[in-house]
Image 1 (spheres, rainbow, N blue to C red):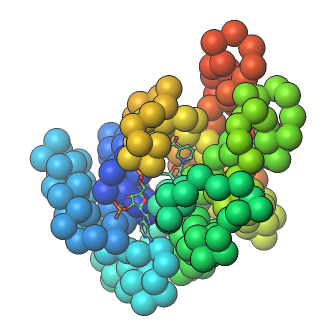
Image 2: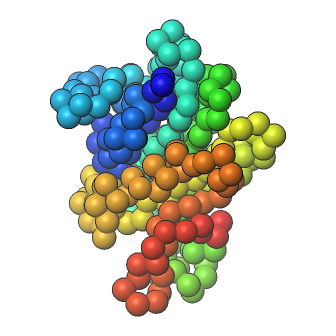
Length: 255
Ligand SMILES: NC(=O)c1ccc[n+]([C@@H]2O[C@H](COP(=O)([O-])OP(=O)(O)OC[C@H]3O[C@@H](n4cnc5c(N)ncnc54)[C@H](OP(=O)(O)O)[C@@H]3O)[C@@H](O)[C@H]2O)c1
């Protein structure tokens, strides 16, 4: 049997690295998308040393040329792509916690360049390769922070978090992109879904969180390995609830 090929962006650390590790454990050949060669090679080497089929692919999601080169390389080496996990993301390039009214447009644009335009750039470049696979899966790593229901309602503690413009709105855009790509691809066997890792201990959160990076990767892995009768166009992952200890397990979240 030929191994499935999976590309994970931002896979040199955190949730992306753990996603690559878990997809490799499922028997997939994993392509470690990373913008920095040293960090990407190191991550791929670490996975290979534990027996995985893992290879570094230079990929900066904000750079057209880098993304085009990555697509060309994958086409040359494998001829197709079974799984794309759009995982690379950032909270704030300037790392400033600001109210919407004080948000610097420069920072907002920089966040969108990675979290939103990066998803479109990479997906559009990889789509011809995904269409060459028998039943490809696209996973957009989103967040409950991008759920308007969670941000404005009372069923999730997210509603009590401070107001912020850039990151939540970027992930709301990722959610809508997920719905729109799923709509475009609804008559072909490609599924497009968004993953919510939950509040996870990575560099992104300064090590804070209630979930390990391995747990944060689980929704992405679930969506990347969906059977043919699985859903397309949903936000799936960890549910944070105002009930009990706050852990609502896994399920589909409201947009
Ligand atoms: N941690 C959480 O609580 C949490 C919750 C919900 C959603 N998420 C989402 O989960 C995803 C992964 O986050 P994480 O927590 O694992 O964060 P992380 O440890 O900071 O990892 C982020 C990854 O994205 C990469 N990246 C950033 N900009 C990039 C670019 N322009 N091109 C390519 N790669 C780029 C980083 O590469 P470098 O090492 O080169 O910087 C790194 O590999 C993000 O989309 C995030 O929004 C996280």
